[in-house]
Length: 281
Image (cartoon, rainbow, N blue to C red):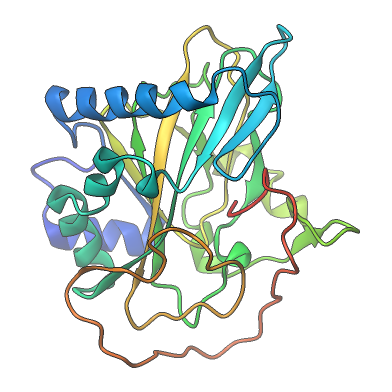
């Protein structure tokens, strides 16, 4: 696994992203910044105490111990100032600008939690792009880890370079829900082409919208929480999926060019995504 370090130039970061489809910054946030985010998470989770069903703010799952846990916070950007401010963090945006240009918009945010020993808190192999297709591929996911991500607690697994294969077809459930499964699973059958991506608390992983990725359940004893921020170039316009996210389309850096950049191609669009556990990958 290649790790972005202070010695890696912007040119090297961009070359690696274009070739491999991802970057890792193990020490993006300092301890004070991390403490602020952890406190914000604890504050927001207080609202979910006693919750046994998913609602518009929290996705809830039942753990192997019979207790209920929050699996995801939808649009944390809207629920705490610390998460709002993180979207505009210049250390993040400097990296993103180098990869997709100076005019950057927010698509959505979510905060995924993996409670210990919860078999449901996992994600099958998928790409992000088919969930919310756009007019070009300048769309990426930034993952900021609030806890240490390890192989034991369900760190990300990726197929480096798979973004160059373009969008893959994904399966649709009969009720129209996006099932988050690849139609052709042969592309992920060879484990030799896959790598685990453990990231320390306070670190950042980012990946291209067509990167094939998955993660297992948390089989350890410690939680794994990460906030995901999906950014896009301002001339990259959504042509499918949901846009009903807090902050969707907000300019976070640069100016809105009020133009759209189109790429040639034919891609399958998602249907109506009705299962909140499957929304947005």
